[in-house]
Image (cartoon, rainbow, N blue to C red; front, side):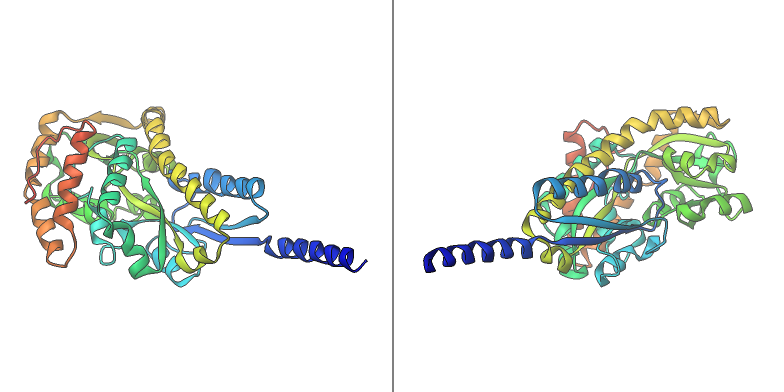
Length: 353
């Protein structure tokens, strides 16, 4: 009897331990951008439901996400700090709003007229991150978070409230950008204005600026076609300079099987930011035309003129960041080479020592 009692007790104790190990996990996920942004839409409609489903199916745990998009939990320029402080657990944001914290993470912007293919862009960026450990480690070492995924945009062009045909037509015009891509405008002789998508419509409407360096999804989803009737394909490139990060302490506390699922789904999410943006690009140009937007494509000679005005800038930027102790020359050289491996031909082959 004593033995059987002991066995029953052991089984009950074991079951109790298993029950105690099953966790109900709450994760706060947010972005300063609204779900009209493709990457936020994918956070909401792919990442969150997929993690929830897989955790339920493959583990003893349950995950519930508390979602906050469009600045309801964190603003666009405060998301890195929001993840760092633990106000939110997971954040999606553009590195463009962290020019002092993450200056090198805008490296594709330093090489304008790169690939317009978002799938290629995110593959190129991933290759650079994998070969230069600093690019991922800085999130952990300085900002108490783990980089889960890179995020591609679809290709950047120029939307305006006026028609233009040559670089000279832009001289003195007030045009908006975010972070480092303002330099593209400066070299073209335009007047650059720092802005963000949530304020774009009102700013265009009131004449704060008359155009935006923007991918077509932004022009469609934020209804900028109502205030900017011209969208011109210049082909600045598809830039991978957003990321999805998780607070490191919160990640470390999660059960190992839940950690594995987060990493697994994030990898798929990363790839989807490329494939979905690629698939949507031509559809969004068609939508713009249906909305009455004049969609123009400039000849290669205009792209070449603009690229030539910028040809010394990558080296200057690399030297500036190298002096700050960052591996900028290494990153830019790698990015140039990886782009070419993936089939891209630069209108001007930038030289970085």
